[in-house]
Structure formats: C-alpha cells, structure tokens
Amino acid sequence: MPDNISSNRKKRIRILKRLIVACLLAAILIPTAVSVCLEVKVRELKGQVEALQKEAVQMEAAVEEMQEKAARDAEPEILTEEDGIRAWEEQTKKQGTTGTAQSDIRKVYLTFDDGPSIYTDDILDILKEYDVKATFFVVGEGKEPYEEACRRIVEEGHTLGMHSYSHVYEEIYASKEAFIWDVNVLQDYLYQVTGVHPEIYRFPGGSSNHVSTVEMQELKDYLSEIGIIWYDWNISSGDATGHLAQEQIVKNCTAHLENYGEAVILLHDAADKKTTVQALPGIIEAILEMEDTVIVPITKETIPVQHGKTKS
Ligand SMILES: [Zn+2]
Image (cartoon, rainbow, N blue to C red):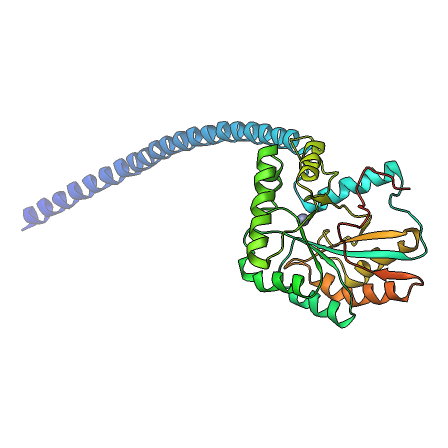
C-alpha cells in the first residue's frame, strides 16, 4: 500500500510539474505572440496614415489650383441680373445721372422684366385697379404655363416687350448669330401666343452688361436693322437683389423720381419677387400723388432711356 501511495504522489508531482512548465511557457509565448501581432498592425496603420497624409497634401494642392482657376474665371463675368444692374449703377456713378430731361409733364414708365410668372395676374390686377398701363419685357423659354397671362398683358393695353427667349446670358451673348436666333425665336413665339409682334427690347442685364462676348454695339445695330428699339432704365427698384422688403422697393422707386423728366423704373415679374407685387400699390400711389406726373407704357415713340447715353 505505501508503495501505491508513493507512486500516486510521484504521478501527481509529475503532472503538477508539467502544468507549471506549461503555464510558464504560456506566460512567455502568449504575450510574445500578441506583441508580434500588435507590431504588425502598428506598421500597417503607419503605412495607411502615411498614404492618407500624402493624399491630403495632393488634394490640398488640387483645391488651391481650382480656387485660383475659379478666381481667374470669375473676374470679368457678369452672369446674373443683379450683376448686370450693378454694372449699370457703377457706370451711372462714373457718368452722372442720365435721363434728366425736364418737360411740363413727368412721364414714369413701370417696366417688369423676366415674366410672365405666377405673379403676372396679380400685377395686372393691381394695374387695373389703379387704371395704370405698364410695360412687360418678357421671356419665352419655359413660359407655356403663363401664356394666358401673356395674352392678358396685350388685351389690357399694356406694352409687350422682349427680354430674350432663354434669358441665359452665356447663350444669348455667345455670338451675334446666337443673339439673332434668340430674338427671332422669342418674337415668333410671342406672335403665336398673343398675335402681336413685339417691337421693343430690353437686353438681359441691360445694354451696359459686361458678359457679352460680342460687341454690344453689333447687337444694338442688329436690333435697329430689324426695326426694334431697345430700352434700359434709369431707376432701379433694387428688387433683383434678393428679397428686398416692400417698403425699401417703394423707396427705391420713388425717392429720386423728382430728378427725372422721364423715368423708366426697373422691376421684376418673377416667382421669387413677391415683395415687388406687395410694393406695387405703394409705388403707384406715390407716383400719382406727385404733381404733373403720369404713368404711361413704353411705345415706339418713347424717347429711349439707354445706358451710356446722356439725354438732353
Ligand atoms: Zn432679366
């Protein structure tokens, strides 16, 4: 029996020894393996970080190049109505006020660009209420939903003028041929819709715009050749500039009116010009309150207000 006990004890001791050796081995090998794995991972991540840093530097350079190009491209271009009007304002500042002809009766012309729109009927209703006639320089492209309003302009005795078919500056002013095409398409379209061949024109951005790649004089000459008279403005309502408050629009239209014998006021008939519609009664009332002042539509007999010209 004691022999049995001693052999069992030896066996247990052997097992214990092996366990201790196994534990020691595990204690050495597992951390080693883990650290090797971590080292590999760290190197991999380092590589990725370096690649990303390189990419970031490249992108930064590309962005800088694009910004420089955009700045170069943007410089002389005038691509919005607002910019076109600003060009006129700058020119007016340099040359002094035009259109200051004095006569016994002051004539005021309310002109609406860019229509017809969702507001044309509202504008026409207000004009009817005050028994006042205005001038609409309209656009053709995409205006099919407002053809009825276009006919109303003519039927109610207002003047229908042209303001380009597409109103896309880059297209209209790309070449003389492009301009001619645009004028003719609009004139034909308006004839189909209203039965009237409009004979007056307002250049998108005004005749003093800087965007045209063609000499504006060539385009003016073309209009003269086909018997069309073009009109700019000498008072801007300022409504091309974002969403101007109605009170400000009234003020812009009327504050300097007394300096003019003939005043052509620039307004817009467009979906985002609600305050222009709201301002209209106030504008009309202020004008009608002035002595010896009438509101009339532009006709071919109206002496044109044209930018860059000083009238006597
Ligand atoms: Zn316009």
